[in-house]
Image (cartoon, rainbow, N blue to C red; front, side):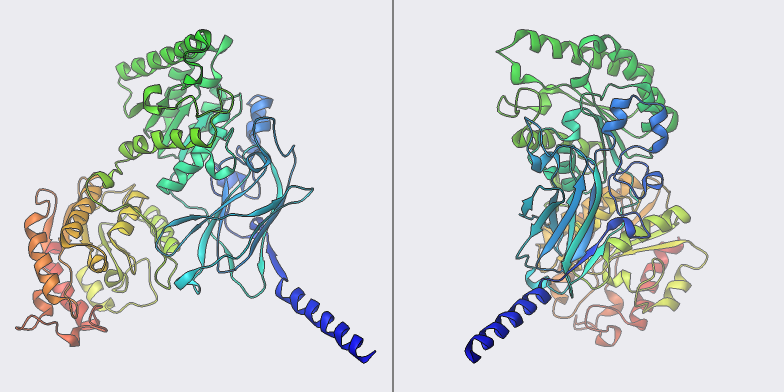
Length: 582
């Protein structure tokens, strides 16, 4: 009897321990006091919903478009967590699946992680589609970044409306929702293909692939069967302060709508141009799945494309600027890329995105990979919140345009100025050097060239005309890249700055000397001075005030052999003063 009692007590204790281990804390993103939902074109009007169009649109657009706008296609939520298990639970209003599209695409969610170096990682899940849908991500690991965790992004259902949603982690672990970016979005207006049919999971919709690969927010206004270029929808599109508009409507313009293509295209573009000169990308119908098997289908969609091209050329002849075109040939989809001849499968979605991405990079001048090895990335290697600092920069630039901009790493970050940092080691020298000027500190601790490229590509130099831009980059690439690669990367930064700040004087500061690397830094700076794009930027020596006659650093000017102290920043200011005061 005593033995049985002990076994019973042990079982109870084990059960209680297991229950404690699996106790979940649940959070609803709608309860935050900031906008969490990403991919909404009218965030102020749509706060607290998973909808794609504001309520007032119901009075002006067709019911079919309105009903589809309740679907959460293209939207996502992001959070930071270090939990080994993450659960997502939610309810949807419609059917879980369709004959040609599985539940995981119609009604599922899809989660990606971003590690501290900005690398994307897809997360596999166990799921159950019941009254409450659940996705469970088990055995998540973080390697050396366990204390920091990862940033997660969860794409929402493509063909269903979300009634409510919660994210859960075990008690004791971090779960912090992240605000949606203030960056101008790419706006995708199109059909069921744009909405996401027939991706097997939300992350494979081509709009979500584009957003994930480029890092830009994407507003998905694909309306299944109803992306018909109607004037009421163009009125709404024109309200969005976008960095790019994409018109991918031809698959919905057949039948009795074909004669309307020309006029609707011309009038729609005019509506957008009344509000903005943002680039507009025209995309042809690709339906070559029927080539060779249905002459009627082939001739039908080619007629649609001809009308679309005619409108595009007419707008060009009118003098409408900043128009771009993605042809059927450039899309390059094969007969294996669709489910039933119209809607892309996952292969088709990837091919579609692969055609879009270089075109968008070209339009936004983001083709750095063609000239150097650096792929723009985010990072979270330091203790501060990297994305939050980026958003602070965007907000400050809107409040007051800077006259002088410094782009750098921790050496710049912890000097002084705005956005403020936890350390300000050189406030006196900063204020003396920049007295009377509006200066923005775009220094980010632990940034490498690829991280500065990402920030430049994502709005930190947009919307204002600076007088001077100073680059102090490269030291964090010393352990990762060759001297030639670093110089090519710095020149790519110069090109990126020049495109966005054509009126500014650009200065490139040589890499600051650092302990145990004095010789390499000196040689690299000599090469940089020779190979710098001299027509675009001026070189500033940053070495002489920090070195002894034997070529070693003056240790008393640094906190750790790399970061200047108060006196070190005074010497930095002295070397920058001539360039700034010219």
